[in-house]
Image 1 (cartoon, one colour):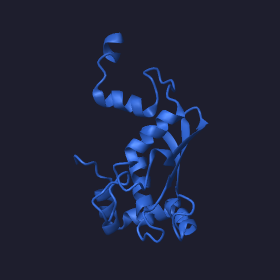
Image 2 (cartoon, helix red, strand yellow):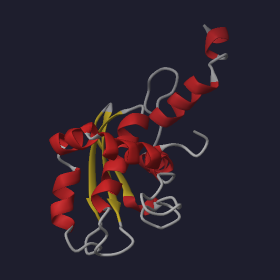
Image 3 (cartoon, helix red, strand yellow):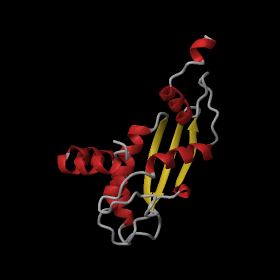
Length: 159
């Protein structure tokens, strides 16, 4: 068994690292480290209008990610992002990109809540409802034009 576990592939090691589990399935990662892992996933999302990432535009920061343990193997992830301007017309699309990228990339069981930071957008309440509505997210991703934009935004730089 020792020989097998010492020869884990780099991909499997990365899954263990991101999930916060050790090889025995025990949770070993503090919430702060999980929050940084989540931030690492979303910081490279590209802005729909500009050639910059959300990190470069300070739409997301390390402080915008909060993790709460719901039970032994499930976590609540809360993201609060700040659009670049209070009337940003693409805030909902940015929220959708964050939602899609985290759903695809996180190896641990989670619930996700995404919000616009309080006071940073003129219609934040309406947008917060939209980006946390699973039916609206599913409907948006069925639209081929919208799906293509999301795919471009969430693609990793080496893709």
